[in-house]
Image (tube, helix red, strand yellow):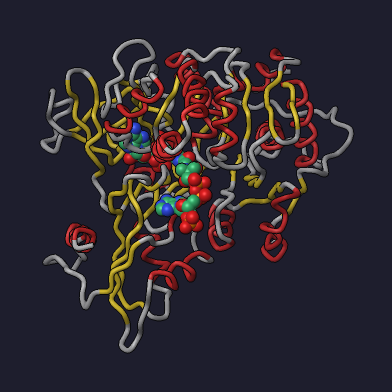
Length: 501
Ligand code: MLC
Ligand code: AMP
């Protein structure tokens, strides 16, 4: 029978090692076999899941891959859940996507115990049927494969739907551009509910027959130790991780630093993306390791769009040119398409790598496109042939540690706080995190609040990276003529308070 291309390739990679993790080493063959057992578990007596949504909470490693592939092979849509999501956030994702079943690893089982109360079937990833030879459905590549939840300019995150064909196009574009090969070895420490970890690291490595070393989170000391042992040929991270590694290397005694730096220097490729890499960090990394970081630009809805070249100039502060198979235009405010060097416009994208739709939101999907081009909301210019990102058209989108956050979603949560009457959330610049979440609040009469108590209260309601890091209490929030809070004025409040410190 015809298999999905990712499975066909894994079968061909056979007994090569695909994953190293705390549970040992695992071959491609064993991943394929295990994914068949996951498919058998999910199918039960059915012949095809027919695009039913199956969510999963499984740490990075062979089990994660087997579950993702198993859902696909059974004909389901895979929805990876965030390890750091709160119960409220999980319930939102599961309800919005109308999930029918959740697959959970033993170590995450407690977090999903609430499923029973919501009528959602819970499967244990460690409890797979022994026999595996079942008839699996043939999967058309135009069927939906995955939904990733992403924040935007609306209050709640939206589900970004990609098909098997779209995922394949995203992977093949990167394999070509970055010259992935079967001898590659890469550490995987980014969260596996976002495109950076899932496509750029996990899927590209497995597609090419390379090897992943999986970590549940960014375990810097262990990973730097492995760098010194030449464990990796490729490295991909968000800018915050490069900042943290620079701080760690600078604080180290010389001998250890030199061993690690030599390991970095020998890698064939180091990439940064998901948020702007400050030119100063780009330069400092080169000074320390001799590596010229390759910065690229992407988005959940489009996969990767722009990239500095594998061969040739990797320009600090710029994100390069369109990747293979990706069509990009800049739409200037004047309505002119590709207005010419130095004139800003919105990045718009079309091609096979672009997502299909927002799950169950036809209106949002329609608004996201103009004449077939997806509107990213990111503003850029072209300078001497390279794109440079200037910022976003919405102040309500915050990028912190590589995570995209909606100021509106955080505001809606903070409004439930008993002391808060009005609130405005903004992202303010931060050397390590890119931006951090800052909240300006107007209190209800007679109430008081401080940052520590607000953080403690928020932690149970939103993921840790959405918790406010700065707080200002004001008598009123500056508003424009339409009565809307002016966020630039709120940002200025925080900037002024930082300067006065
Ligand atoms: C955590 N902390 C923060 C924070 N996150 N402080 C400010 N802002 C934030 N965003 C605090 C914690 O509360 C804690 O404080 C301390 O920092 C350490 O927390 P941690 O969770 O242990 O940090 P760490 O594990 O080092 O995580 C940092 C990170 C992680 C950078 C590894 O944030 C991460 O994995 N980010 C990647 C996200 C990603 O993959 N994005 C891609 C999206 S796809 P205390 O006081 O308790 O010590 C996309 C498209 C594309 O964007 O183009 O790729
Ligand atoms: P997400 O919605 O989480 O996929 O995040 C996508 C957003 O991350 C983009 O719309 C950009 O705003 C931002 N982004 C990704 N890569 C870069 C980069 N290299 N420079 C600046 N911003 C980036």
